[in-house]
Length: 265
Image 1 (tube, rainbow, N blue to C red):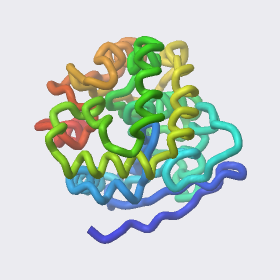
Image 2: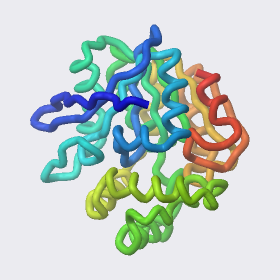
Image 3: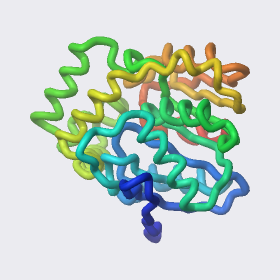
């Protein structure tokens, strides 16, 4: 697959890396999880195929949130408001007034906050493996400390793959790509700073104010984000549609129902 051109939007003094692909009628902003690298996405064949299908029915805007991937780092770790504003920045750069938002994992919290804060710019909200409260991801401080231990000792090795896709642990190619994804997504220090900020996420109070059509998709045995996180979103966001699929893998592009996630959209 030919490389997508990476461009930069400005959010204040921060440059936010983004790509645009697909020719569908709907503009869709893909809000990633806690780290990302938009060029490395295309090096994993299953993810590239999954993204191509997404682009078959929408014009997709991928971006790396500030502090991750190809986007600028700032002297202080950006909070949710600053990272949410990255969505506005890339929409402005592409010339989009209104778009559907597709938030995955921690990106779902940001997408939900954007939809609540900017309903005039939000056509729809789609959440996969998402949560309103950080404890749906890391229920205890001990669990979070275990991640920090991994970051300090093995970040970039890909050994965290079972924490995100337990059914893919024997796939050595995916593990190698995942290790590179860690390294390119953020340095160990950046990953820890971002996770410390993420540990403060609780957007429960804003859920009733979301006033756009909302679709929530969650795998029942998601090993990363507890399914109760998805159920809470569906319960609190007015008129949200909730789809619960089988499976334990958090990564949406693996698993037997990976295409069903896109078919539901």
